[in-house]
Length: 291
Image (cartoon, rainbow, N blue to C red; front, side, top):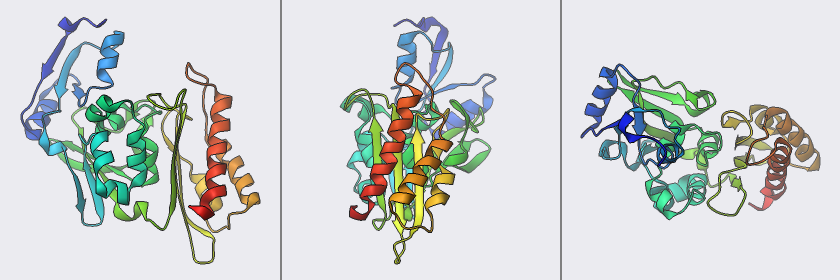
């Protein structure tokens, strides 16, 4: 391990209230530790900043998958393994279960958490496009109270969010009807290999049609094509009210390309990412009648 551990300290609160009190009282920003699947990588690479870490793993108040009224509520410490195993998630929000199945190996799925993936803020996070496509809200909690932020307004830039220094992610709230079985949906992940790979492009699509065959609901969300995960609102509006045909697939693909801004990096090129994003959308639209 390249990081010198002498510069780090670890706090282990016994309750959520205790954790919130520590956040409120701290004069420095605490590093929140959930499953640790990202932070331990930073430690090993020697890029983690010395300071105080707040270990949330033992806080049962941040766990659980529940149906509450007309929403599915997921605790921030919900693991990918729990997402895959949940009948509620597989039935009501299948894109989340599909995304969870692509994350790392079994050990990572057992420790990695939904809240941690959100807080980490990587634009390649596999769970983030499904959350955007499902109109999720992020429940932030501090000693001052709780507030909900629409997920498409949560990030302010690369790995930056609206969360205040004394706030943590408590829960994720998703409308039950977001994954309606009457709507076609697809999760797409393209990486260097078929498994245990960081996404070159990751996407989630949800589309519904009215009785006359025109599109009446559309969500298209991508990761790894911009500094933050993004919903393509112009694309969504472009297809609403229209019938799916070759002309719409062609014009909507052009709109898609105008809304993304991929870069060249060590994992891929901007050109390849544009090609993959466009192809994924086109294939989804071509197959919607059969989904």
